[in-house]
Amino acid sequence: MPLVIEFGQQLLNGLVVGGIYAMMALGLTMIFGILDQVNFAHGEMYMLGAYATLFFAVSAGIPYPFAILLAMAAIAILGLLYEWLIFRPLRGTDPLNVIISSLGASIFLWNVALYLFGSTPRQLKIAFAEVVITLGGLSLTLQRLLVVVITLLLILILYFFIMRTRMGKAMRAMAQDREVASLMGVEINRVAEITFAIGGALAGAAGALIGPIFLIYPAMGLMAVQKAFAVVIVGGMGNVSGAIFAGFALGIVESLGAGFIASAYKHIIAFAILILALWLRPEGLFGRTARKGG
Image (cartoon, rainbow, N blue to C red; front, side, top):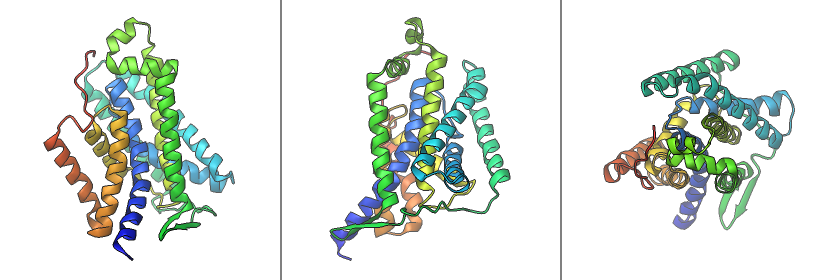
């Protein structure tokens, strides 16, 4: 394969993986940016999104596009429950309490998945997923193209929601200064609910889209959430644009490294980039200045 074609192919593959990273990181960075909280169970939401899609598409026989929407809704509801039961009661307490509870929720959801689905990896087989589109020597399965298209669509919808809706304005006010936002009448609990629901829906979408490409198993969220945290840190904690850029960038760099060096080193490449980024720019590529408010 000519070098230019190989480079283009790896670039396409990187956009697919980067789309998943971006969706994962968007939920994490919104929760941190708006609420100053870290969700360590985000990887399990991604994993449960994949299992939910498997259930709806295979067991219930629902068409795959609708199964994706149902999985997103299910994980959004899980995000709401997560906020109500774990984060809200601990809001305003020692941050360590929230971290420990979040880690506990992660372990709990992991074990629930093990109990319900077992440890044997499964694959979501969709009829059109392996249809290959070839153009100019570059090839891409329909499922991988779907990942990129849906990721971009969700990013546009999220941008419109944050910039053009009343709730989006409340979220931006919370991100800038929670105390002032509260004094101006912003309902903190309502904003927290919507933020966790959106984060859950995005994680569910990522899991739903990755199911037909890779195997589904209870521990699949572990590495995914580590990569998502790396993306959030590189892009700048709490920065939505940074999460999108860093997600796609990490996916592309990983894919190029796997294609031209060795696939065994792709995880090393990701975390080497994280260390380098922290060394060169500790606040992240799109880092913000510290904000007021507790």
